[in-house]
Amino acid sequence: MYFGSDNQTGASPQVLDMLTVANNEYTHGYGDDRWTNQAIEALKTLFECDLEAYFVATGTAANSLALSCMVQPWDAILCHDSAHIILDESTAPELFTGGARMVPISNGEGKISPQHLKDYFQTIGTDYPHNVRATALSITQASESGLVYTPTEISALSAVAKDNGLSVHMDGARFSNAVASQQCTPAELSWKAGVDVLCLGATKCGALCAEVVIFFNKELAATFTHRRKRGGHLLSKGRVFGAQMVGWLQDDHWLDLAQYANTQATQLAKQIATFDRLQLVWPVESNELFVIMPKGLAVHLQDAGAEFYDWYVTTLPPNILIDEDEMFARLVTSFVTQDSQCEAFCELIHDYFAAQ
Image (tube, rainbow, N blue to C red; front, top):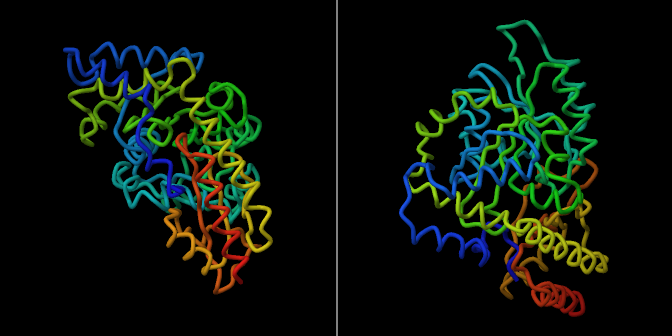
């Protein structure tokens, strides 16, 4: 019953097989190999456009390096209140950008809306250089609340951002889950909706460590190679990234993995919704569930071997309060989550309430 995080799984067999094949070859280093080149060409085909793509080992590095190309040290990056870049990446974005400020604007809602952006620009000071100037908007797909931005929503956000001189960054750690949920094309969910830079993550969905920074606005990529090298993310054995990405994308394997994880989350949510004393905080639109449950139940589940995270109470919507004897938890399904795990989890919940 492993619902801690989708980064706790290993790699899919298809990705591992491709990595094994690449391992048995001699190649040039630092990404100058056929695997990396093949992966980049596959990404161009997938997104239906020319692009610049660079591989790094972690999502934090991907986001931080990407943003460093989009802002100056004295600028601001607008983001969700619980965005990974502001809540879970320590001060890495500030370090790599040279000091750019993260500014939360979502006011406790599950996603950033165009009105949030408009409100920000209506109230912010513009006495430069005394006031901070926002030059980038960062959105997470799927969001930290497990919600998915539709192409229409992204287009609306991008329009307001561009009207105010901002470029648009997308943290796509779970971009695959979002595409599978929306059943639209990757292009429609990214550059066609106004995204300038996408950090596409495979690590949470079937790879060991494979993150790629994709510049749809190629002008923003001008300094990335130097920043990646300086940041220690230019691997000598670049095929490690390229081979994983080739295996991940081949025959829409990445979408199959994501769709399976999403389906498991939807099924688990339906079962959890049958218990009166459990509350699903957000609609389940990807592979994450956010649940308010009695603390006693949480202990009961964890003692029986279930893994899930106690989540940030500060990320709850303003209209939802929890009692002292309740816990706010996050559960995440993955491409290896089994029906039996979900069933066992819900049987434990049933047994706990039956004993009350």
